[in-house]
Image (cartoon, rainbow, N blue to C red; front, side, top):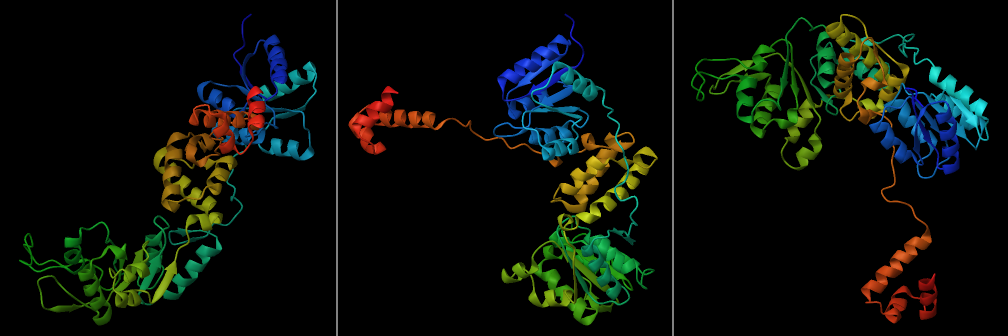
Length: 441
């Protein structure tokens, strides 16, 4: 008998149901794979191309709903048919919501199974694709995008400081967009035509940071062949953004304090001060108060830097902004890599909105960039990395009856006592008669 091309995986902890389904499916020339647990089913899915999943819902350890969720995200094109002996309105609705094509209640006839089977295999894999926020007005403030309350609070502070040169301190986790906020302060205000200079203090070697920031005179150190201005001189009249300020040495911190207090800089190797008019915006993902306690950051500099503080919430605390950020990156990389706008499926967007984003916006941008490269016109779940998707947690050890555990422990005690039943009974806190009875069992 020639088998059809479809491979069907059936999952049920009832061996009789598995055999019944197998007989019916093989009578229609389908190639059948059987699994008595979700763990076994996942193993088959990883090694074999499956065209249809038929699963029960009520199973020990990990149930069918968990399997459906896993398959919906890791194998989004695989149709799913539920066969269960515990029908309920809530169960059927939950299954259908998870992408199940049909729902069959035990006991069922061969005709009912064939009808559900044909429906599931012929189900269109086409999906409605649209932007979840297509009807929402996108809010952009400079390069900052978001509608969340957390972002609106940041924008309100920017509005207060953009037209003056008060020192601003921005704090937030890595990847939250601290430089974007600094640029918004500068470019949205009346000083936008003046220079904006961004300096990553963590990227410049400690022995060079002082010279790079404040400039140096010829002969100040080996290699200083001419007089040269630093980043502060380049930013004169405008804004200097000092990112990762916590990496600055105590010597550099002392010089920064003078800039803030006296509005002047002294080049390395010079005794002459130069007046400057610069707005300083500093940022870090470090805890400066903790660094002050450890005496590696100057307390007086900290208070000079934090005239106005802006705290940027991590992406996990403003998930309302994820869809807007995704649209921004889809447009950016769609035009760059595909010469067109790329869309995203609602299912893929749901996965992105569920994730907690330890790498914040930088991690999100990286994932969208990769997804755009890997897709044709639509970013779907299959284009997202597996670590974002639903994970099944299996028990690390097999669950067995209590009698088996008891037997194993009694044998362990007997081995430890060299089969001395008196000693073993004492350790087990039972009498010898009870021990004999258990051994005879």
